[in-house]
Image (cartoon, rainbow, N blue to C red; front, side, top):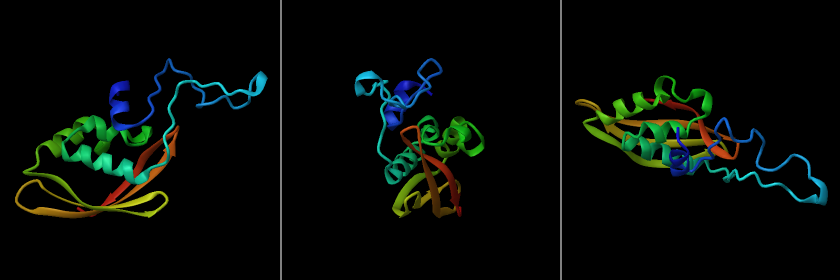
Length: 145
């Protein structure tokens, strides 16, 4: 993932050369002022993150979709950037978001349709989110189609 792609999807990008610290120093330095490390922290936004994820799927943007998933699941199986792009890019009818609602603080229900071959799939997915390093990320998806 590049810093530009991370900014595009609204997540904080930290490279291996960036500070491993949090946004602010854990203790106040002399003078009582906080140190800004230049890392942007976003508000917790499960609904917004899930909307961005499904928007990325609808245009087969595997990089953007995977960037919205927790780091330990990125690049693996269904969250692999190339797998996402290949699967969603070869649909006869691209994924269309039909409805979305928040069930609780961390859970979003998504209704969508798509068609790979002959049959149209009308699916409902339950999407779990987490707040990690100032970013709302997807930790799991259970879909029925």
